[in-house]
Image (cartoon, rainbow, N blue to C red; front, side):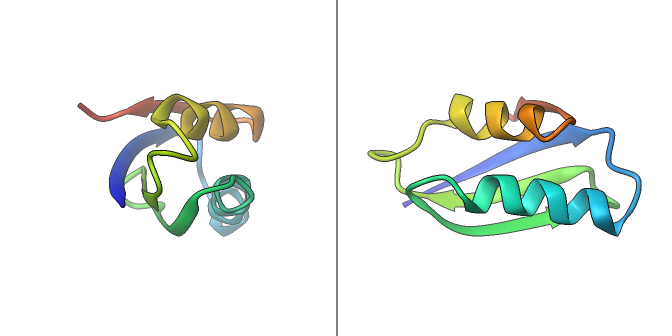
Amino acid sequence: MDRVVINVTGMSCERCLKSVSDALGRLPGVVQVEVSLAAGQAVVTCDPLLVRPAELSDAIEEAGFDAQTSA
């Protein structure tokens, strides 16, 4: 399993946090999602054979937020 940290901008409330969590949780290979409003980050534990970091970022952006995978 990989741990991917994604910087998320545009979240301002608990509903935003839930939207990001739900968008990530729907992807195949995602095992765990932790989203922090205060840190502006999503930490995703996932199977690298089933989902790529770019797909995680795309899911967040499709939910209406800006996302950038941390290096």
